[in-house]
Length: 335
Image (cartoon, rainbow, N blue to C red; front, side, top):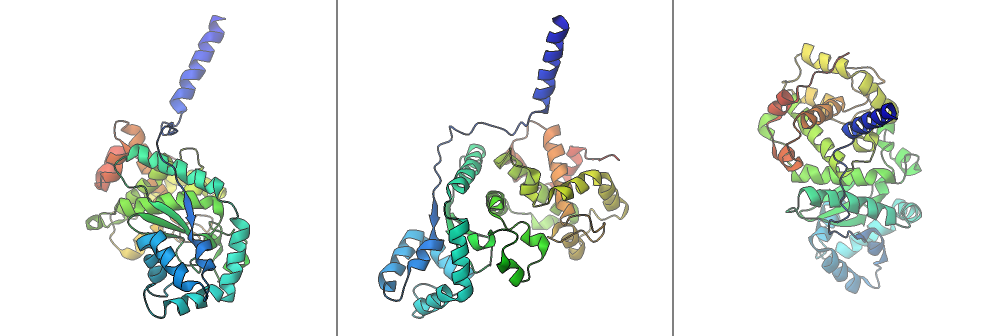
């Protein structure tokens, strides 16, 4: 019995050591998120009711309504004399009508999405209680930006999340590596990633490759904290086999950067090659994913936070000394 007890005790200690320290109880965080469906309401505007319907939407959606009209669907300000005519053209376009029908089918109910986003923003409020929690709207963008932001609001372009096999995307000529992330389950991590991108800006004065890698790693670690139980592929947007490729080739990729003296390059093309979206990383094999620099930066930040448990998430996101984060991480993957 004593031996059994010791074995159980060792297993408990081992399990606790392996547990995810980012898993926290946020059920007590006072936040109720309600998604408002501008994508539906704007289609209720007709030539007959425009004089009443347009002012109502302007009042309800505030500055976001103007940002949406001017910057997303590019039909001008709602106060312009020709706005109603341009809006009617946008809403009656055959592709727009078809995509609206598909949206109504795929997103007939947003309960699950609302719960996921609420959980993510509860984690955000837990770590950053002084920060503003944005209003969340769904929109139809005409296949433009997937996530649209203002200072206090987020718009989710539902027409960009209709599923990888949606025929619209093939008609538009979108490559497979982009289409594979255009499904509803990707929305929560995309929303919080883009919100972090706007809240925690990159320090442009340190614009070399390693700084970009660590910055991207911070954003991905932010997603670790917002969605501690979500799989990595949802956070970075890789298929599972691409995650496996990165894990198996982590040391080799790092060695490549070091041996080719790329970490401190300021060449824009080199930075984009390892940070920008792509079907694969041209310096590696075609089996590699794009954004391998971002993935390595993620591992650096994870190692840094594991090695420095006293550092809080707000302290990490505020820290723009990317070189220090690398040095203090002790990052050195082995073959």
